[in-house]
Length: 407
Image (cartoon, rainbow, N blue to C red; front, side, top):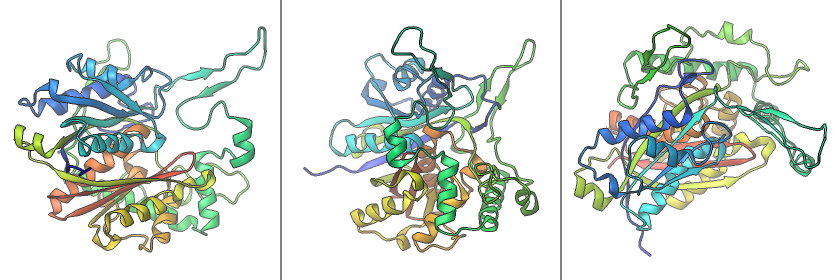
């Protein structure tokens, strides 16, 4: 079967909110509906009935994002009831998986127009309480679903361990001998790049503001229009004073300052076939070349981008030297440095996250993979370059990578 070319036509995202920040009073389904509606508002000539599916990544799905948030969001956004919706969960790469699924459907002739993206409302993630399998039991477990393991299978713990995300970063730092100083230096670089990008309004083309309600009685709402997680006043001295967040034995190096945040946000992309591009007069941002996904050891999940990238490059017959932009999700500075060093890149390769990454911008899990693709596409347009690699690690031991090209 001959595969058809796939195009990223357009995309929008909300500003990324801090934990308990400006998006704290906005539901996940409303966040997702907002970006879908705003994306389609930019294309009034597109017949909504022609949208073959809406695919959204979401890692939690335990609260207001339950019961197929993609389907609920498209209905809330005003799409016809005939348009279906699918929610995808590959944890941190959920948004990228949604984009990959939509791209695959287009390439195989399943439809001409898809909406793909992701949403995560980590502030509003609920606590969950286990149910007992017998009457009057007293072994109920309570978990915060914002991040991490819950209801762990004892066999999983025995076979692979159930290290937290931060502990997996410590594992990478230890195994690859990545120093605290190098991690803090990388984190500062991320903050500096994001600050410079915000100053020149680099993210403005991809952000759609969100009208947020007031936090309390009588407090007016406001228009939230810029990522609020970055800390532009960061310094190496300040970062060096932060205590390790995941080890208490005095040997830890992973801190809140060199890690991604716990954040809120949503992103939606318009994916289309060549036929739809001609029919509706779209001007694509990029062509989606290919995607690859792999599994790795859960305890060093942060290294997942390495084999994912290698698999994808082999598949496309491209090389790292061909990549003009590299968007590598910054779950942790230790994890990024582990990947770049294994891939043979300099710690501060000029192609790497040119506008900063998740350490500065934040990491709403289900949204981030789609955001990487959108940000990379805009960077290719802004610079006139050709290829971008987007890659990320995934909890429970996976890696995913996508290549896009400016046409």
